[in-house]
Amino acid sequence: MIFHSHIPIEALQPYVQCYLEADGTQNILAGEYTLFPNGLSGIFFNFGNTGKIILKEEHQTPRVSIFGQIDQHFTITHSPSFYSIGILLKPTVLSWLFRVDMHEFTNKAFDGSLLRDDLHSLHHQLQEYATASGKINCIEQYLCRMILNMPPPVTLVEHAVHLIHSAKTVSIHELARHFNVSQRYLETQFQKKIGLSPKTYSLIQRFKRMERQIIKMPNVHWQQMQFANEYFDQNHFIKDFRRFTGRTPSSYLLENLEMGRSYLNA
Image 1 (spheres, rainbow, N blue to C red):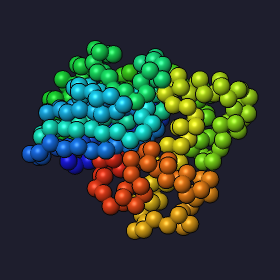
Image 2: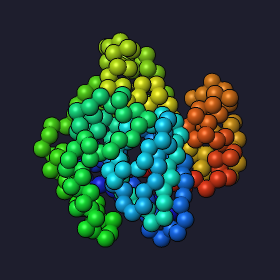
Image 3: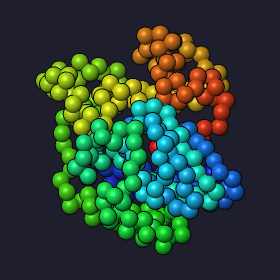
């Protein structure tokens, strides 16, 4: 399986993180991959021989998959000659586009064509293009028609997400106080717009920062890690790492987790 990420056009960058391509058209064997939560939701268009998505439950992969937020590691399997291209959306965009409560999508994958008929039509159009660039251009024309005619979301949650990304160690108490709201209200809005609590979303962002440093280290030494002061102790760090990867930091470095890392760092 070959993985590529593609940057969206400038007009869509406030809404789309990237396009993620998984090309198994040359594979003659089935495959299984572990993916890690990345704080993004998405829409994936699947072609060829599809497989399964194993979240908290097992789902057969439809032609159009819509993912909500994932708060732990999960598994995908595919058959030979599988190809997929996905739109990874900024944290609140799926809620805004489909006017849904994202808490209902957490740790789940849905048949996107059941939510919007035009996604089924778009899948058919994408089959006409032989290259990733052709497919992405078609997707971007669709997104521009849908998104650029709608006012962008500007809510408390968007501002809170920005602070979490910029401040790194900001607490939920500090966020609530900054916006002059209760922690309960902040959590309710996060669940509705993103599908995660602000604490879990913050933990995923910390995990992503952690992974970027660990992957550069031939050996994991707790004392040398820049993020060590963000954890109470080493056991706390390992507990989080197991939750998001299913592995210890040492075993994570030894395994071939190309798909998981591609999805995580998209």
